[in-house]
Image (cartoon, rainbow, N blue to C red; front, top):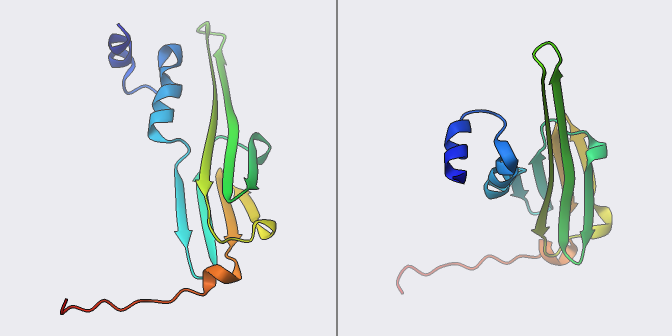
Length: 134
């Protein structure tokens, strides 16, 4: 029965009875990119339709937590139509050898960027040559 409802509403932005939130969970919403250099780790999260007040950031014990809530309401009184969607999300990103007290974050146009500097220990990486002859 649930599959029938999903098939009927496929292709629409909104699905009935909470299917949208489960679909977003399976997709890992919000989408996150992680870039790492010798000096820092940069995490970018796409959060369309949210403001910075809707998002919470925490870092503790080597784990960065990004959480928030999306609320959407629309109403068309002429057509007697209204729609509401509420959804919570949380992503946890493990980080090693970073300076937790120097984390910075910026939010612009629905994109959250978190910059985490690496600690001195993490910067001392020694490359190991691989011998092709076995």
